[in-house]
Every structure is written in structure tokens, then in C-alpha cells.
Length: 103
Ligand SMILES: [Zn+2]
Image 1: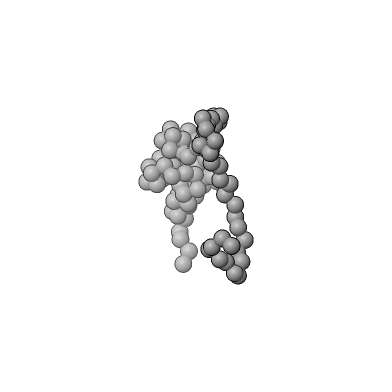
Image 2: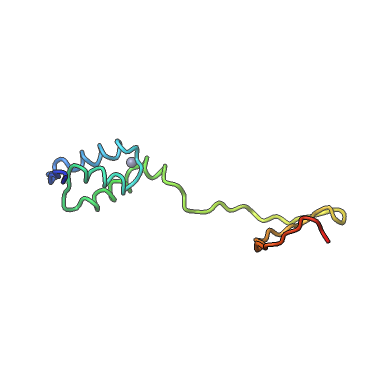
């Protein structure tokens, strides 16, 4: 079954963007575009949605940051031998014969 999609006149495009953005709770460009495309279309739809989402303060503030959290490096200091122990995590290869005892 093919959905009937209407070409929305320019007068109603902003209203469709506003409705779809709010309906999808400001989830982003692709979902808003898909919601609009369920019922209507217009020639510059993708550009208009991108422009609208980029100008929406709610969308921009809820967008996850792509910047990784950085923690400041600090020197490790110890006051006595064996006070600090460092363990490197290694990925060990699986073997057929594995023995938990150390011999
Ligand atoms: Zn938004």
C-alpha cells in the first residue's frame, strides 16, 4: 500500500516543522524528517528540517556532546614500597587446558 503524500504549500511548511519537532520531542533531524514524510513533502524539506533543528534551542541543548570527557592527569605518589600496585589489563588468549593452580 502506498501512502498518499501531499506537497505542502509554503504557507504551511513552517507549521509542519513546528508540529513535527514538538511531536517528536526534539529528537533530531532524521526522525522529524521521517514524521513529515509520512504525510507530506516539499522540494526543500530536508534543508528546511536541518535549518529548523539547528535553530531550535531545545534540540541544540538536548543534543549529546561529542566531546569526550577529559580528566586531568595527576602524578601518583606513594610513601612506601608496595603502597601502590599497578595492574595492566590484558586480553588473554583462550586455551584448551586451563589450570587455576600455579605450578
Ligand atoms: Zn527542537
